Length: 371
Ligand code: TRP
Image 1: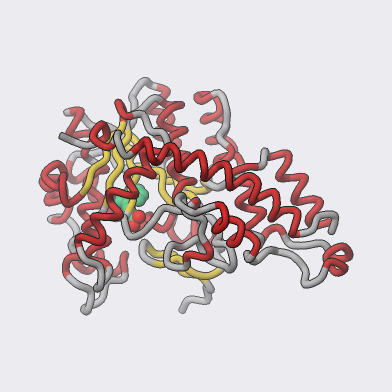
Image 2: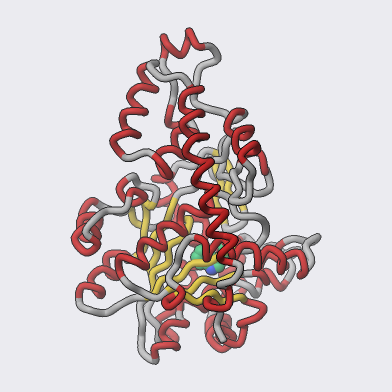
């Protein structure tokens, strides 16, 4: 019997997530101070997303660091299911991935699971998905990955690159395993049932490309962990190193509990939003505030549950600024209107700049494709 009031699966994230419990449930490890100081030693600075615990959990990240210290470079692997437009919640792990690419000077494989998004939704056509594939790739490129060190792999187009590997994987995973791990039912279409090896395959592609066992580090939100669990179980049986992971939390949506979601557009700030839309969404958002100004002055507010606070913390505030904001919020010295204004003032130029990069990216797609 489960008493939890949250769910986290690759296709659904709901409720008020207790991340410590999730670590226990998934059997991952919390990122320790010791691991953080090793990263700091190598990179010279600790990225705020590590320092502030946005990336909070891992599988064998320490081993990747050990290999790296021995001169054995890893590949990064991450991905995107093109089911809609890109919002700020999607950007966080990608911005972090770019930082890893830069600091460790490593190659990246970016998988686009257009097949997954077609199979998952009954009403979606391949054309719908293909439109988002192109759009999303512009967002990915706009994040600033190094074209010489980054390949974007589109499943339906580049399947030949991963098909042989995915067969090796598929042959070693039973229906009862994926049923248990992913919750597939008898009514699940068999495309979905057969999909996990396709997302697993890029974990081993670097070894194939390099012609020798090559470690892989996957930065991803923790909802993707079930894939890596099954992949790690079979990796060594087929002669590849177990893929390692570093897991992020979810950026809260504006307006309610749960992650920012494309399916509830008013809770997400998209990379294509107008200034008016940004103003309106932030004005209307839920906060951790009290019902009246008087009460807020008297009782203080709750920054912990406040999306405005977390956006500012992860994207725009320095650690010091953010800590001070938290203190003032709790003490009733800060009203929600002020934080909303700060967030609007920071978000609008950020998105305006991103839009420019996104336009430019339209002419750069070929540089990132497999031949
Ligand atoms: N399944 C992911 C999604 O729905 C996309 C994805 C594919 C991915 N490979 C990945 C995400 C590797 C993180 C890491 O968005």
